[in-house]
Amino acid sequence: MSIDHEFPLSEAAARFIAAPKKNLIGGHWCEAQSGLTLDVRNPATGEVFARVPAADAADIDQAVRAARSAFESQGWRGARPIDRERWLLKLAELVEANAQELAEIETLDNGKPVTLARRVDVTQAADFLRYIAGWATKIEGSTVEASAPAFRKNEFFAYTRREPVGVVGAIIPWNFPLLMAAWKVGPALAAGCTVVLKPAEDTPLTALRFAELALEAGFPAGVLNVVTGFGHIAGAALAAHPGVNKISFTGSTQVGKLIGKAAMDNMTRVSLELGGKSPVIVLDDADPKAAAAGAANAVFFNMGQVCVAGSRLYVQRGIFDAVLEGVSAGAQKLRIGPGLDPNSQLGPLVSEKQMNRVRGYIQSGIDDGGRVLTGGERIGERGYFVKPTVLTGLGEQARIVQEEVFGPVVVATPFDDLDEVVKLANSTPYGLAASIWSNDLKRVQRLIPRIEAGTVWVNCHGVMDNALPFGGYKQSGIGREMGSSLIDHYTETKSVLMML
Ligand code: NAI
Ligand code: MG
Image (cartoon, rainbow, N blue to C red):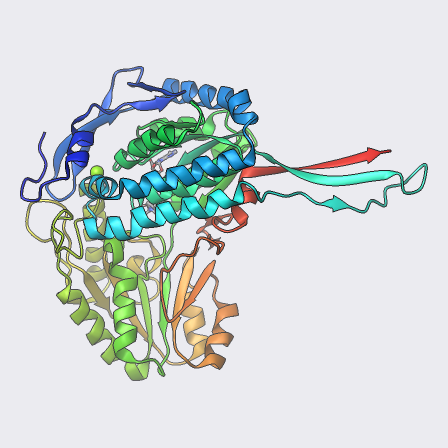
């Protein structure tokens, strides 16, 4: 097993990569009961550089039991909200203290530029943990003035309390592995739940390092369990396990539906953050240069492997050519290379499978009559690099316009008026996000309520705020993450009515 020697790793990352990888269950590091492992590949080279346990239903069952017993343990039940807050703050600190190591592991595993991993994934994970830590001490019920049919007047006391939902199964994707782990684990622990986390098979490593840090932060054994394995085996077992009270999933709409159905059999609570096909809408008062830079970043950031990627670009006709020229020029200027090279702005796609999927979509766009303005091809034969690609000349029914590509590919289309662009923007099954580029307040304000999307950005795209609810309309999911919505996600409401 080897890693790219051109770009050496920090000592800490090299040590972690070289060590045997095990699952964390009930505070113990263990192999899969079957003894099976799965290969972890470096997307920049295609080489296998690590192996992790390939868990199955037996390991998942063991982890769910460990999470249940931790949930009922005095060490966790008896912990005060401020203890949970302190542990989460400590975890945030440890993520920051090990930022470079985590960023390098993420880059080896996912392919993304190490500078991006450090600046975005690791920094945002630490910030988010810090934000959510504060919620642990701010979970509130309310007192209610009861009008219940009384035997005696005014002799009731009624209130609600929030209780942790129980054992949480978290299934996360490979595009922001550490950040997604923090998004799921942080709020569950803040609310007093316990967790079984199943990272994506393509990128299992930072979740394991995160679990080490959680132990170091002082969380009791069994509160966080991490089980690596394939989605259709370990993930499916977790979604269907009757001992899980809530499933929190981020990934494809297709798998989200399977998970939702499996969860329903046990009435397991479920929240789903799924795919998107987010429109970038540029009105003709916008500065074409600024809009082009924004549109390029909206789709090429993280190689387009982003649920909110701005993969459909709608530009008002008067400035269509200027914006398109800017986006194409921007695409050509991006420095593409191995993620460990600090000069790379774009890395490879996460896997051969993803690369082939993206290339298949580009081909379908060409077959449907689209014109490639720039990109369209793989780069080299080693690793999973695809050129940033801009297509135009496609109708709304083209597959590449309707379906999530999850790669550095944008389809640009001109429009004439607001009614037309509203129709275009809402024409896919998805509804995760959208951005509008304009300083014409009237037109912007008229558009916002008409766009079917959980988030609308104005003059920016993809900016996430820990305090703003995030989630999808339509087939982009169910429920909202971030902000106070998180507490709703991971708690049950108990109503108490006392006759005095
Ligand atoms: P996926 O939805 O299969 O993977 C996400 C997670 O679900 C992984 O942890 C995987 O192990 C797990 N999983 C897979 N099958 C499962 C099952 N039957 N039961 C339970 N868990 C299961 O996504 P995949 O196949 O890696 O990527 C395919 C497409 O999905 C991408 O091209 C993209 O369009 C979309 N996607 C969207 C993401 C988002 O953030 N919205 C993230 C990842 C993928
Ligand atoms: Mg990988």
